Length: 556
Image (cartoon, rainbow, N blue to C red):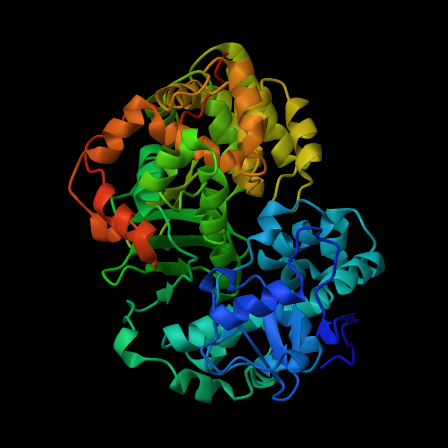
């Protein structure tokens, strides 16, 4: 373990290792009140280290609240590891949802954290991470250490420990398979890290799991629970993904979504489903077990599982015009992506046409140029890579010649590396690069930014469906007035967009049709808000409308 000790600031005689770089970060007193109330909302946003025991906990830990003079707050578990603390065996802070901070913020620290979660350090090392961010490895390490109390290697190590814990308590994989699935390079490294972080060997950690809650997976599959900060609008998430599912690549249902995708080690298949106990679960088949951590990170981003729905809903509800919409659909999420380049090409293919037409064209393109895989339970096809579309896209795509050439041009840029998209991009730089492409306008550039970066503050004033939803809510619907009114919703305009979309008449019809699935509407929600949502939301098993959330460069 490193000799590094987090620089600490004295706050009224108490120690607070949280830095002040995030101006909105709560102080020691606020965080201490959080741990006194055991507020689950803050799980994953910081950890509480107790000097008298040498243990760190999540904010909602049920153990007796420690004395103020013994408490140190750290922004990440990696910082607590580096300071010599081990994880609490009772609350298992590594099992908490991730921090929403890394999506809300767009600075180098947040971009680095998104890339570390994606496994970049494991695949490319610290130099590769620094290169992607445009810094030297030394300077990047200095920046992360100053703010988070740990450098990129320690942060990646904590991420591997988190994945390993989930596998140990959630699967029957052998210790060797767990080690390599979590990204460790040796059994010895895995055993030592688990011992240091959790204060027990892997076999003891596995012995603590609840057999009653375990679900046996088919041979060759991994089946895990996904931590969620509730409430969560699963009706909207699964319905949205079903509406956009590409035939042969994706399969959407009322309570599940499955697809095949390319990962660094090869093709993978996964399914996210709403289990009978109300939890979201991930089932996966991988070509390379080492891709599991990357897959988990991308699935969490796809389903926006690290959002803070209570904070978002509270802010949006402050405006009377949105209060009823938020109360009707608490915990709304903004879907992310599994593959950034694929997202751009899909958005461009869908320009100026309905979602149904876009799915047809994308399905035709996949059937002609995609790669069939056997990793899935049933035969499925990978969405074509950029090289295949660049070389043969004009032979398959149908539509206006200028738009088809623009799609192929974007594929060529992705294929030759001229354009690289990913979760570690700077938001404004990514937008400028996209707008420089032929055939990409503000709607597409901002829509990709919303999806790829998880940017919470994107407004699409050119989106016809969103403006129709705004009109249904009694808000201005012409682009200029719509933009001006929505400025008051910063920094949560992406989530306001979701409410606008869901308020559109065509989507209202979709959300209230089909079989009742009230019990499935909220995961781990509690209190009157969750109770209200369980009686108002329904699944949708009727045919999908042509434009639930349009992937099109709409004209004002």
